[in-house]
Image 1 (spheres, helix red, strand yellow):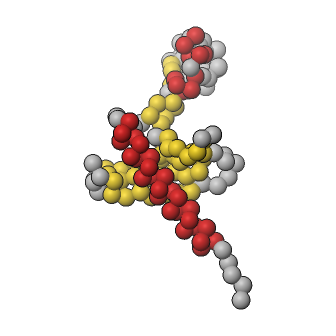
Image 2 (cartoon, rainbow, N blue to C red):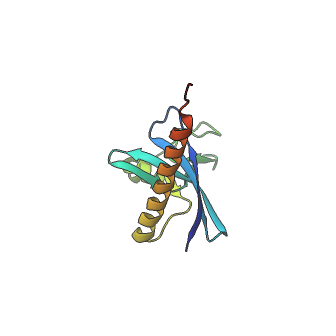
Image 3 (tube, rainbow, N blue to C red):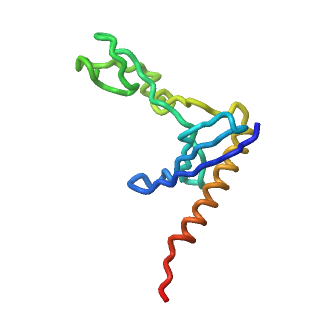
Length: 132
């Protein structure tokens, strides 16, 4: 599988760790959007697109986000299992798309971070204004 295009969408704002969103096209026929470039404690890394998981209210069956304390429909108290309390981060989000092998994850991350650095270099070159 060949990466045929990487588009970088830099982010600025309150979340200093989120540096950009990317869109990656494979073989000119398949696209994955919203791969994040994040500044971690040991450098930049990518996070695959994910969605928040939902769980049904025992009272009204409305689907609420995992980790919610109260139902958004009926206001009932939502009970949480011990497993949910221990590993909220793992249960709250699930990847929509992700590499199967570590080798491909490393390749994808390398290519995305190279494109990100190139975009940063270009934007910093064009952001300088020179006075005559």
